[in-house]
Image (cartoon, rainbow, N blue to C red):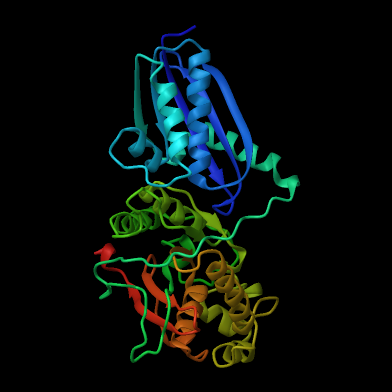
Length: 383
């Protein structure tokens, strides 16, 4: 039996909603000794349901350990703010879970809640992933996201009501908005080398750029709803984009998922070469590459192939997050491709549009097939 404990809890959903699980750890506050661990697969639920389930399991385990004072540490800003009484709980699915957590908390002399970065919650996060892994053989399929009928957002983009009525554009319905964020600096980008599937991390400067973009998005109106639900974050599966996405997720108090269709172009044998080195190595092919989107680097991927791949990723995102705002963290070519789709432009745009590191662009896709680009290559957060 111990008087004071620290509990760390986490929950995750691969799809939000999707296959989900939670992890919970109880530690002696004085020694750091692990007194209890809990994890469980929950089936198909949302991130927030999984996070609350982790908190309930942690408080239950703390009570079983005989604690009277509990310090709760979680990387879910929503759960911490709601349990601290600073945010209202409007989502019907969370209300009974919050009530159960409060009921358990009332059994202790004192309970405090603190938000921590996800990196500091790695023990509980690992257990949550163990729980989710245990359910992968159950053929759980992520449930489709519900259509959001109306969203009012953002200052700084010249927008108000996002539900388009018949006007000069002809667009109708609620668009799916993609906030397109390029990753921060890497050693490859410093030397201006072809950097495609090579899995390189951010430099120190790149981490600073990611933090600046995350700070901007963390204060962006509408990305966190009144009941604390954060906008989905979808990233390329490469390290440099995941590090950038994690900074944004920490700022919004949520987590991100990855989509393989958002990965950078496969530059094949040109990977790691400078523009000049590639041109000297394969002069005719390199000239073709710069004027014909069907040409591919040796052993690599053409821009036509990238267009098809990113097009499928766009359809996947719109199907799952229809009518919502999504933060998409990706690379130069996929972002240019999405902007090209938004502008209904030809492949020459890929060579004429410049995108800086950690730049932000915005494109909207309407259910009637119309689209609109609102922003391109904004780096005001880096100044």
